[in-house]
Length: 254
Ligand SMILES: Nc1ncnc2c1ncn2[C@@H]1O[C@H](COP(=O)(O)OP(=O)(O)O)[C@@H](O)[C@H]1O
Ligand SMILES: [Mg+2]
Image (cartoon, rainbow, N blue to C red):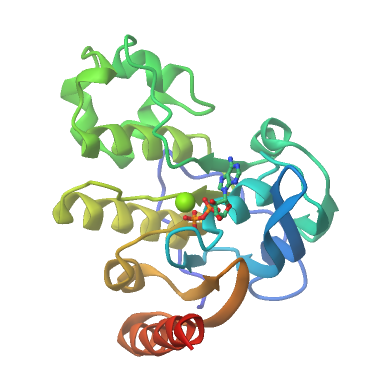
């Protein structure tokens, strides 16, 4: 993708100096093995997310998507392999990486019910106004207890708060679980805009592959804890994903 001109925005900030290539990887995982106790749930997983790129991670239930994300953002320990942040190997944990600009949105929505929408936005890393610029829908809800929001509104709050912190990369698990199609499309479009206008690198787990691939640049497919295939976005990418996914199922059956 060619760099797009950036319109002035509350979200704007100075561009970092270009690092060698046109689209350097902001986040890389190399040979990752991780799991629970002594048991590896994912083995030898490698992936990369470039600046301004949306990368989807697909796989059946239990394939290892969440484990991969958790180990990537430093929320669980790695058994082997490396995570590179802006090209440098890092052993930082999730909170340190968050301060360094790696935002993580886990599959359980991390809003605090009992606090208002405004207070939930205030505990984020970014300006409340920046979150509202992304999701003006939240403006009339600022005084509302966040626990009373719909699932879609809660996810807007979570994503708005994460992106308002001006992360260089955003890792999102189960973006749209249980949400209505229109909301999912809205969330995906906001991710695309953040990638295009701010150069945010997005790593996304999303069940609805056909929707994810309307905005994703590339995808990876996990099967049984290993990287099984990768491909590009759009209709062609969706076709390739279907073929690759069918192949992993056949492999399990035979
Ligand atoms: N907290 C946990 N303790 C033990 N095993 C787990 C835990 N979480 C996930 N697993 C196992 O790790 C494997 C991968 O799970 P997960 O990464 O959650 O897959 P996905 O997100 O693709 O559905 C599965 O076999 C799952 O049962
Ligand atoms: Mg999961």
